[in-house]
Image: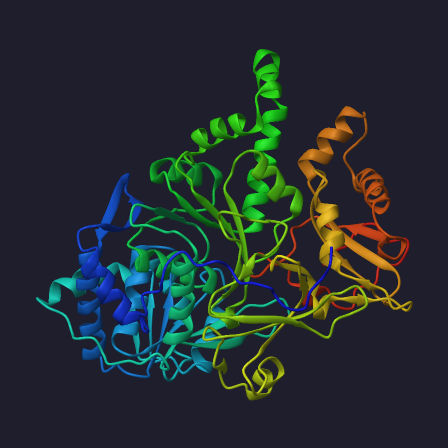
Length: 563
């Protein structure tokens, strides 16, 4: 395959954009256009709670009035903390409505993280779910500028306080909408400043390239504070008049129950969830015995997939979108063979977040898709193998990092190009391929490039390896930390009459590593590895926090790694 430094074409558009420049404008136009349609659904106390578009607009205006009466307004920083629920979106829209700036917080972060972000961002107020009120109350006394704590469970009381709301603030596309603090894999959270124009250009590009209709229903499970779910799962559905069903949790039983209830057509997903879903499907199919097993083996894969989708509540599914990290090729191919309509995309918070996505009529899901309509993208500093750094420019690119000019200058060029730090290339049809991260690249003494992600994908393809982290302590010897799939390993060892202990687990995984090494070039092969007994710590988007393992060097006699 010939590798190109620029795309010969962008993703085809299917319609013109709506030209909406700000979030308050979008909320008002959509609420009027789809007034009687359902916007949000969630299971509460064994009932399905529903909220219409017209109600959302009225609640946004009334909460906006309440915020203004507290003395909050244009340019003020207001944090939002909570699980995925309708009130999170209403809070976000209300903050935008009065011209303030939202500070979305990660619901899975620590109190120390909240304290740092609230202090650093000079947040004057926080809108918080009751589930997290104790976390905020425990640190509120140390935050001099935090004047108001508003609890989502009290929203009904706030709505009922007024017969009407407040008028929309006159905001422009260049006004700051949110500061999103990225958890990152490097350990240094940065505040990504996104304007109304940044975010809405991304929402409008999705509208132009992907057919989404008011009859669509989205299933929401990813963290709503993150730009991927916020842009793709909160703003995009509202822009298109869709409904969103919020899952209660990621617990398999609850998620499956909610999926069946929702019967969604669109599902934003992450590689980790899809990988576990595919492994679960594979395990269930392999356990089929007797007549059922025979039928399973002779059925065409798409017929089999239809039965699986019916059981999961996915029979209406039109698109499963995967982002946040790379999906292993074996997972994407396996799901496609079963007829799951998969689309992969690529982006980062600094780009609001989308830079590329696969076109639904012609996806190449081993790629990250084609560049969105409003962006330019190219490959720079190309190596001998045709790979280089992906850079992008467009109206979706952030203003910069909050109170961090030096970090901004490292990633934004004077003429507006975002240096993503990701390595890749374009193929001859304009599809973008990601091969690794610049900062994680291992350059051997012989000048060879080793992308840890490539080796990790091959390792985790084994049903006996749950997670892997590949690195080199000396830019020569490739090492790995491996978190085994202990259930599968134990089952295998039992069948071999061997005890489940560290030595036997390591020896068994060694055989898997040896098989995988045979598929790799000599300079990419793992020389030594150790097993660990816990999952790796991860970011919100389920990427391993690599910085925590910087400097690790495994001596030859170490077989188990303890943090």
